[in-house]
Length: 442
Image: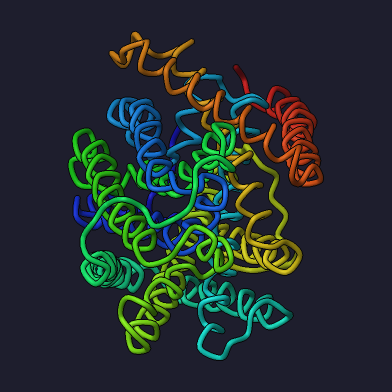
């Protein structure tokens, strides 16, 4: 496939290994820590730090397929390219790629809502219409910065990543220190939280790591891509594991499980108070606001790239709606509209659940495709790829069972949306493929 580099703004070699790691961790840490810690604790109870470990292990298996494929064919298409290399340019590849893009948009609204809940903490405002307004505001702000240009983003996300990783690591260490370093998680009994709750919590923990996939989407621009895409993924997952565990134990040390659940949307700020006092609480809120805002930025950028790429690869239709300018700007507008709608209509638990459903289905599609069609060619170990598929499947089943008990409606929404995406692609692509067959000599 030939892409005109000049017109898409892809600059080969423009992202260093450090930049790629900053991008991956930037997207991961924004979503994972602030938004999901409380949600995971609610499902896993006292075992919630283990949920992060399990999430990391499964993500490790999962990353293998992406690393092998990206090392073989580094491209700006990232996941879309991987799917197309496995399934050809049909509805399966396009549907799964669109699910990936949507799960990124969902993550964005999750983080935007988290930004709003933390920002309102010092004013003792929980929930209400302000959360939605602020969430939409931060998404629109990210859009404006993205439209302003690309150079500023690379540098900005590097600086932000350093601040976030440093700040959060300090938070975790301080919280552990002040409560006397003992790694047993604070009071809370295990019996109300069964295995199914734990397995379901792993689905959300996987979401906390899925940011590594944004690195595959920048394959065309990373220096020495055949080596560095894989390295960047590995390093950013490792950094995140360390940071997440520090925070999980830090929060677990200063709050009981019940307190974490009560404050699930802003558990880090809550945990900072007993550990670090009022100033610690305010600093954590500032850190959360900075981290979530920068994660929304990184993610708006990544999604718009992904959608522009899909449009380029003719996997999704494109309508200008009378807008001028490059495709990436239009996909930015779609991204902002969808993310804002989600942030207004759904609460954090629901947004996280939707994201988990979409992402797991997409991820399973990738692993099945790699295992079935490409594993020999890229020299991948079959059982690792199949293992990733099976793990994802188990987690997805457990998560679905859990949600059917607690919030059946969200399962319905997710199922309808996933089926809708594939059906839509089927019709759109058969229509488009028809046109191509008429125009192009095979």
